[in-house]
Length: 180
Image (cartoon, rainbow, N blue to C red):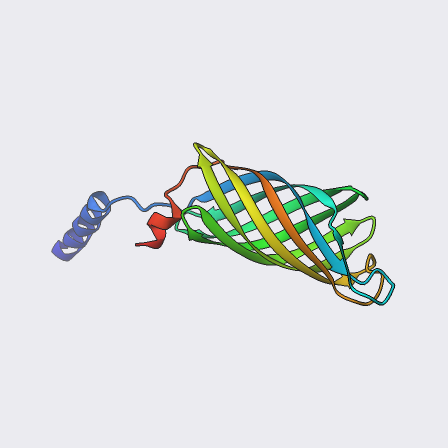
């Protein structure tokens, strides 16, 4: 009997004295931007040509855990608005490299009216303006598959994006978390 009372009392004291466990929270960020750049490929003439890439309007969101805020998963949708219209998207693995700097890698492609699929890499730099930031993003994509390729050769995109980014939930700085 004494043993049971000691066990119950110890259990109650442990529950009442221990600090509450913190649940994992997801942190969300969103961005809107405009991009253009250079496209490199064979237009069907047998020679590699450089031309201006299609101008695109992009919107996306990132999600990360407050327990590991230096890594995120990002989704982007884009509309190429000139000289031809098409719809596309990206899936990104994002890693914070500093307080105002990220690197990313993932997959990109256009879905309509023709499809293209490939890989992308890039970096993003942020200029904070309170709860929002301006971003500058150079990226490089290689698209080896698709119905929009004029020949069976690789299509390359070198893009520069600029836009606005906002955090939906405030969290500790990734730099602070990374130094722990």
